[in-house]
Image (cartoon, rainbow, N blue to C red; front, side, top):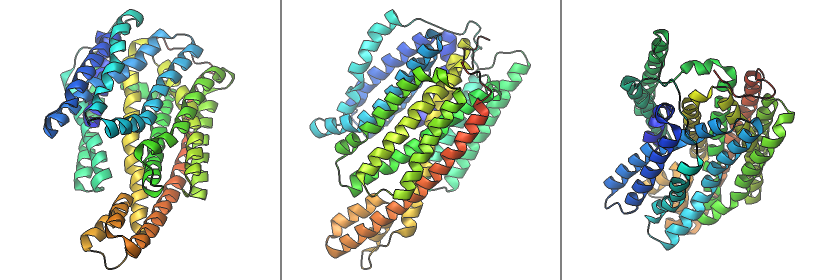
Length: 454
């Protein structure tokens, strides 16, 4: 799903600009609902994988279409920010509710029920969108360019696969080769877009958007924020389930306050941002993130209460920074390019999510492996399993029992906490640096961002 989704976001954004964003939204919603229903009754693992790939195709239609529609409907700056805050709240609420609702469904129903959940949610959209959502498109769309589509798909697939492989098997030859190959194809894609522009042919994606420091600064802030946010959830979920011993559903419920903080902060900042410069608001949100991780690095993850409170502060910072950075990103491009710009924004989210697992999660795992001490006398395969991850150690401890289990768990929990301290310190520094960079890049934006028209 993430491989196909990330590969198609930019092409689908460009297609939405060409054929109409509402039309693409309805096509994507219909396909997502139908394939979700089929996935629920997949007769084999292969068919389930195929269904997930198809869901990636239709998901890539949905994501850029929603944000670009917001860009074209809401002209007033305050209304647009509120709409973006509500849009972002959907992502935050989904991330929080996923483990809770999914856990409940898996506890009481067949595994396919998690796919059927999408159907009743999408049906109202299919009924109401044609009535309530106006159509919008680029009046001068770029011609279909199969080679550009192939280049961006191949490039994003290579990078996403390489990063995902790194999170599972380490930074080996497969990861290096696929990431480098992906970067080469992305470079060829960029050169082709510039060459088409030079020859007065409309490019599929106007890569010159990145020359706009406001646009690039906003996209980069989103990417780094998503990286550390996913990194936090990576270890928080492990701590709550493996260290504290909570079921997934209850562990998810403890993360709801942080999600609510994200939603509330986004809605509040949408109204009060008019009194501050956008660079100040985005940087303040990132500084809050840095402060949250700095406190966590100092205190360690010894308490569930600390994790909940840290996530509330982190969620507040994310709600503040991402609401304004998304508004800056949309406002800095003309409406006709909203689909392409939205696709770039969505790609930064997806890339940030993968980077969070690879960088923050990889750092946490590396520190764990360097510090965990496996009791002597364990079978070699069990010792290797316990040394690999915290989950492996908990599994081995439940298998061996007795004093060996107590020693292993004590060492594993301490090693995991050391990883939390190191990765949190890194995240704090990264957020602090990003706060400065974002301020310098976004300060050129006018105090009140008005939508670009050309």
